[in-house]
Image (tube, rainbow, N blue to C red):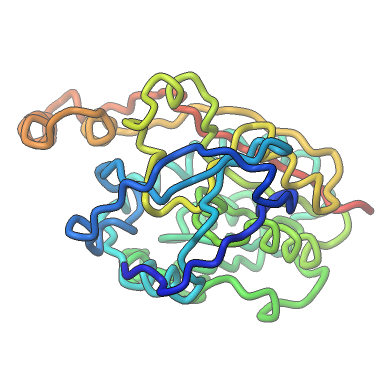
Length: 306
């Protein structure tokens, strides 16, 4: 990805606080010689590169204060590699388990929208819960190509645009592991609020940068990534929804279940050793199992008032 010629300093994308309320959080560790199509791929092997980030003292959001342009980000995701279709199914199962109690609070199960739908694996689960119609938005052409044929009819290729949908038209809008990647997460959740029917719910999943594992790993955590324009804590994830008019805001951490060979990809160790161990695991009896771990992923939700 090319640097924008004139970086624009932005205020906090959650609360709007200015640069005087920001403190250094991460230094710029990008290496353009290492950036490739896989750098913007879902569930990739960690590269431990990041833009410079600051932390807002008012709302606890960590964010890139000089982000790439929206056009640059869109182009990077459109051209991104995709090789995690199996892990997408595992993630969808974890999201469905975590979301079960929230779905029980909904009065209707009509239209559902997923922003950053990937292969639409989670939309499939929503269909099994009675939601219809199903709509997903996904910028990666490779992810859409990896989706089963019957799901592709649900997916619109491109970035999310509020104008593509009618106001008050969805009972559920989901945005999983995407709010960190957009330049303006506040604009996204505000648009979702307008698109929800009264009583509808927005559900987001983000990394919790204050989770114990992320604090333990520091700069060697997989969440330190060139893709991330902001990093949330549980406090700032819920704060984002409250700031934009959602009510009954709450959240929870949850466990993800993946094959051991996938978890191994995330462990900070020399790449050569990691490749050898991963090859040894794949296809083995051990790798047919799913290992359930809480790695600091956080689900937050809020309702549009009746």
